[in-house]
Length: 482
Image 1 (cartoon, rainbow, N blue to C red):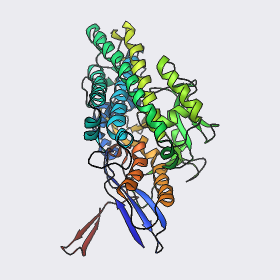
Image 2: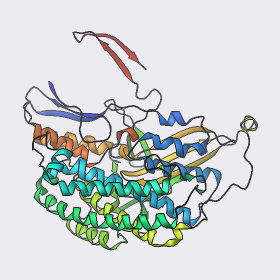
Image 3: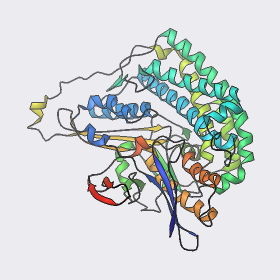
Image 4: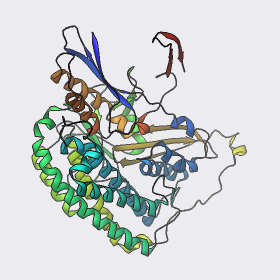
C-alpha cells in the first residue's frame, strides 16, 4: 500500500489536501478530499447579544463576509419580529450583489481561469494569476476592475467593503445618497460591459476543454437552491430541491430546514457532510451554488444573462459536470451586474424608510434569568457558493444560547470527495503521477470555489482535534486529543 498526497490544494480559500491510496498493484483503492482547518464560530456566538451577530459573523471569512452579515441580519429580524421596509430589502440585495460581483470575478479570473487559459498541465509557475497577467494583461486588468466594482457597491451600502456593518435587526442603519446612487449605477453598467468581454474570452475555452469537463469530478446528485417562482433568486425565498433528472423532490422554508438537512461526520475531515435527511446518506447527496441555481431556475429576468442562460440550458440541460460551475458562475456574474443596474436605476433606493423599530421593551439579563422563554430566528440566503443558513436560539433577553451554521461549501463536501475519488480511480495507474494529473484532481475541488474558513466547525466530541508531537527522527512522542 502507498499514498499519493497533494498538499496543499492551491487556489482555494483555506487549507486542504487530497490523498490517493494505491494497493500493491498500483491501482487506486480509495481517495479523499481532506479539510484540516477547525474553527468555532458557533461556540463563539454563545452568550453574545443576538443583535451583535451580524457584526461578529462577517469575521468568519474575508471573502463571504457580506453573505454572513445578511444571513445573520435576517435571523435577527425573525427573533425580534421585525419586517424590513422595501428600501432596506433592496439595499440588502444590492449589498449581496456587490458580494457576487466581487467574489465571482475573483474566483473565475484568478483562481479558476488559469487552468483553462494556461492549460491544466501547463507549468505551475505560470498556471496562476501571474500567468494571466503575462498572457493577457488587459484581461487581468478588467478582472481587477470588475472585482473593485463589487467592493465599491459593498462599501457604499454596507459601510465597509470588508465585513459590512449596516444590516441590523429590522432593516438598515444607513442608506445611500443620490450622489452614491449615480456613481454606483455607472460602476454597475461598466461591470456589465466587463462581463460581456469576459464571456467572449471564456466561451471558446469551454469548447476547447469539453473533454476535460466531461472527465473531471463525475458525480450525479440532487440540487438545492432558493427559488422565486422559477426565477433565479439570491436574497429571499423557499428552498427547492430537485433530483438528478430535474424532478422536484422537496420545497421548504428556512424555519424548517432541519426537517430536510442533516449532517454527518467522517473520520478523514473536519468539514462535515450535509445530506438530505429524508433520503439518507450517501444517497441524499446534494449540491448547491451556481450549478444548482441554474439547474433549478427556469428563467433569469435580465436581458444579457437570460440569453447566456438559454444557450447554457440548450447545451447542458440539468448540468452535472463539476467544471461547469465555472460557466454557471459567469452567467450569475452577468445577472448580478444587470440586477445591480436595475436596482440603482430606481431612485427610490435612496429613500429614508430604512428600518422597522422595536415596539416593546426587552427583558434585561437579570429579568431573563427567571424566564424559560426562548426565541429562534433562521436567516437564509444564497451566498455565492450556495445556500447559507444562520440559526440562532436566544434566551428571553436576546442572548444567544445556541447557534447553528449550515454553510455552502459543506453542502458540496461529499460531491468534492466523490469527484476526487472517482477521477483518481479512472486516471491514476501506478505511483508515477505527473504534476498535470495532480492539478486535474485539484481542479475538481477548485471548480466548487470552496471557502473552508466558512465551512469548518465542530460538534463537541464528534471530530476531535489531535495534536501529535514528534522528535527529530519523526517518532511519535505524545498525542493530545483536544
